[in-house]
Length: 169
Image (cartoon, rainbow, N blue to C red):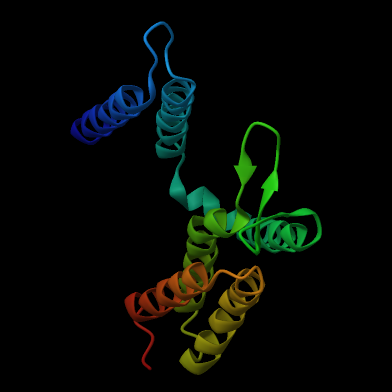
């Protein structure tokens, strides 16, 4: 409840700042209203996600990985170009940026992979190489957008997960 309260308080403060920076005398700011709607949707989504047993995500690792790759390939085909980079897909209401979505999803996929390998006491070099391949395909696709920053974040996430899983490098 403390975390939820702090989140709602910060979101409210953000909406207030946007409103004060962009309002007119007679109408509420479209930017503030849009921010408030997305904040409410974000809080609702986080409550739904927090109610899901994380162990169920293990069985969805392959479809999640497939979704990551398909969305990143879709950006290459139908993505809109902004500032010389093709990073997002226009969905009308919002622009979907698969590279941002790939961060938490790749964590789920790598966690499922590493936990299965750890339970079986498999060869650590094979685990290292296979997990690298799992990480490398999305990283290459994101780098081609071009988005070096997100690519490097995913490489760092992979390295931390390898270290945290106890793989003897």
